[in-house]
Length: 355
Ligand SMILES: Cc1cc2nc3c(=O)[nH]c(=O)nc-3n(C[C@H](O)[C@H](O)[C@H](O)COP(=O)(O)OP(=O)(O)OC[C@H]3O[C@@H](n4cnc5c(N)ncnc54)[C@H](O)[C@@H]3O)c2cc1C
Image (cartoon, rainbow, N blue to C red):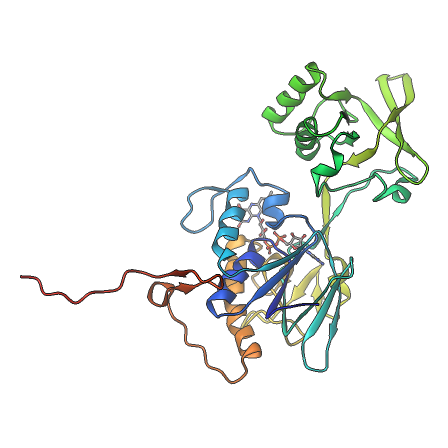
């Protein structure tokens, strides 16, 4: 059982900034995210895009913003359960909540902050009738640990940045990489497309286009995929490509998912909160902040998530420390005491006569 003060569901920008604000109040946080890395939409959908409306950053790449948020909250030593989806929540007699993930990991906290954004990202699966029977037996929709592909034969399907980038990366890890796409044109960064072209010319990536995988072959695990290649409009060629792994990278679609069944008030796929006070939901002790919530005038912007996280932490403090008063102090005045023993503070004023 993982225990903490505030259990945050979603390690996007809102969840990460919550760790910092909670840390200032000496509250510990643990984050759960269905994705294998932190950053939410910023790292999963648009890491290389510049954002222009983060206060004090005239321009910052979404991936760099994630790195900065991780750096800022590191001193408060957050715990992470990554690559697991928060599935169920149970209220205990002592008022705490137990949240269990799809992999069975249990977390207990007096306060739960749902920072789930548009929901947990579910992979878009290709329409191959027997694909589900090969999941985790050679079929993976998200690459969590590239090392499992070392010296293996890998077939990747897709035509976007993920398919291009992972083909490039795995060309140095796997013994064979085949990239299959239903069109000849790829939709990705120009430098990635050019790099794949270069690796194809060097024989490090096999490119099969326009084509699609129509079946998977194997006893207990993937042994080959059946490919339908359409070199000519009238001539389709079907053949098998031997492989150990088939990785369809067709993007991820967000779904509110299991959180929708937690008894929370939901309006148009978002959680209704009390925005006049503290972003608490209809269940006391459960807050919803960032893109996942709704209230009159709601804007799905990163800076709004930061604001909501800040107010929410003040309210959570009262639940965790009943009866204790918290007096807001500026970080410039009070400094910041990290849970890792670090201390940041502005230089002290000195009293010194000037002749
Ligand atoms: C292309 C694009 C460009 C954008 N540009 C801007 C911009 O310029 N400026 C701006 O302010 N905003 C922009 N946005 C919006 C911005 O990205 C969002 O407002 C922001 O990401 C919301 O942060 P969040 O932390 O609330 O949610 P998210 O970033 O969506 O993170 C939520 C996380 O929760 C996880 N999660 C959800 N449910 C579960 C569950 N049950 N279990 C485990 N994990 C779960 C998800 O996997 C996800 O990682 C843009 C969005 C897109 C798509």
